[in-house]
Length: 84
Image (cartoon, rainbow, N blue to C red; front, side):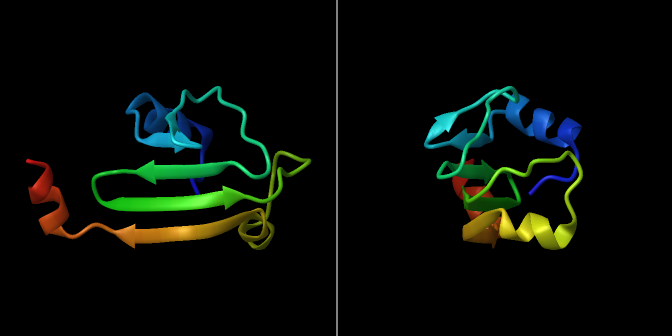
């Protein structure tokens, strides 16, 4: 869902990443069956981890097979205004 580890760490530092409902640090190790949510100002994504890759580099095609998207939506400006 995130292309670089530095981006993932930044999102975790901003406390917008949850694993199984709990806000997590970047050091959190995920495993198959975990549900991950990323809730930023402009987008909300929820997915289940199906498999952890054995190597560091994963092709885009293979990456799509590692998770199952539950929800993926861009937020409307009205969603943002409701937060204020």
